[in-house]
Image (cartoon, rainbow, N blue to C red; front, side, top):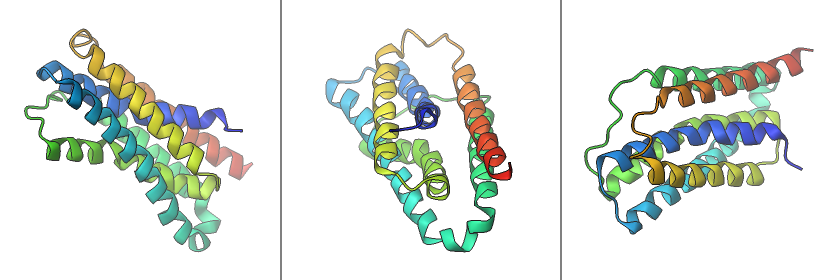
Amino acid sequence: MVDITIYLIALSLAIDCFIVSICISSVSNLGNKINLKIPLHFALFQGGMTLIGFYLGLSSLKIIQNVDHWIAFGLLFFVGIKMIVESFKKDKKINTLTYPTIILLSIATSIDALAIGVTFSIINGAIMMKALIIGLFSLILSLIGLSFGKRLKEFKLSYLEITGGLVLIGIGIKVLLQHIA
């Protein structure tokens, strides 16, 4: 059984994909191939980076075992703050959409998943289902973002990023309090 926390983390990570997808959709008319390429790449990179982070974390777990809860808290806090800071940036438009641009956007939106993967290696060993859930949330929110990009253009998207950031910070605090108590 999967803890509800993974769904909150997956949602928080997928918000970046959602917002980038809205931006992409609002600046260009995309064909059906691109409409599928973007969400698939986002999903693969989010899930893949989670796995990479997990295995990087495992390789150094014995070294950091005594401070692992502080590291998990720090990573979640950092990612949450980063999301909140990013929400205040004005220009989020993408001018060109080539395949290298899709790859770069996929990497950029999944860097946070790498840190989350390291956190998972510290907190709990079960990773495959978590990476799959993160990828699935990213896929779904990217598809929704592309579909509604033009209609949601006027909506204050920064509130979504702020909410995602606060959720990650809250989860970090929860991890810290569970290990301290």
